[in-house]
Image (tube, rainbow, N blue to C red; front, side, top):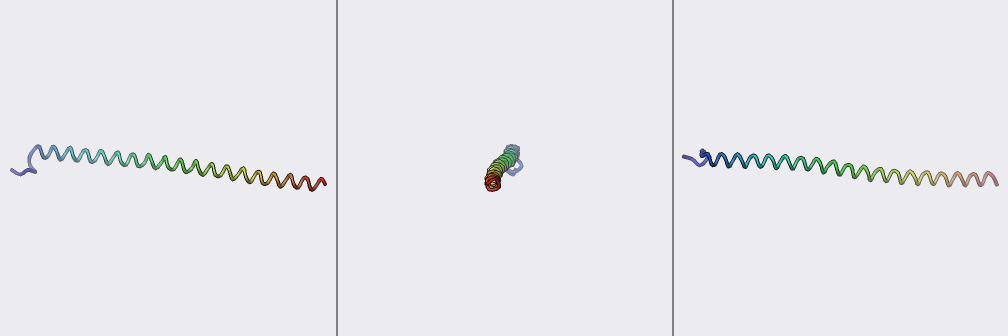
Length: 74
């Protein structure tokens, strides 16, 4: 009787295979979750940078407009 034909070996191999499949599934699930979290953080940083730049441009334009108004009234 071969060791590969025993019920104990088949049961152990089946449990081992099932554990490997579960671990692979959890790794894939964790990877996708972290990937989405990183993307959300990056988009938040990009939006914050865009908002800051927008405020700087608006401030610059307002300063130029007020300077032109001062020159035109002089």
